[in-house]
Figure (cartoon, rainbow over the protein chains, first blue to last red):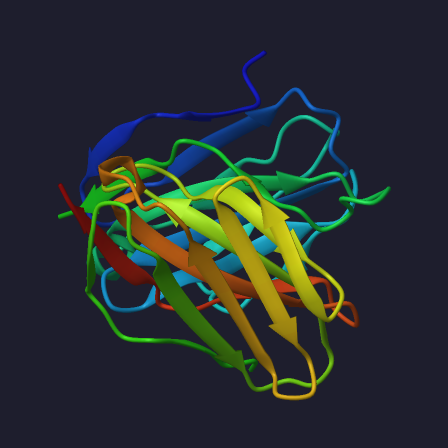
Length: 115
Length: 111
């Protein structure tokens, strides 16, 4: 049982390049999320998806896009990376139903450096 | 924007003692509350969730919720060196289902 996997583990990227961070979950959770974590700023929501086929903007969506073609995958794309997007990115998912509706479980993270 | 405030750390406690972590939130619409533990360089791990006023115990962890005071706390009894981590308080508003995190409190348990 893998839970949530993210790829790559880490990446160094030149500014202006396009990058897609991958996230896959095998728990059949309805909802998925992308966060970034920066020292002193905590975890901030970038985008979310309550169910396959729908997405929404979080607190810091600018410069990022997402898609949710199926239940398992929720990729995050940086169309043209900038140094301020240097961060640790976490994907998370929650059941979206039942008693633990809102309990979010996190993937291992991707450390991204934009130079 | 919901605000979630945690007591500033770091918090250092001797092994075997009780570590007490506090969290206040600004939005009275918040309905669900969570504590996550994050080891350095790792992802957040859910350790407690609480939805109703009162106490909830799970092993050495006790979460306490007081919605009237907009306050949630986490007690770690019989603290162990393996409890040394950053603890994140998170609240969710069922109107938008978005989770807001506090900045975290770093706990160090001294052997």
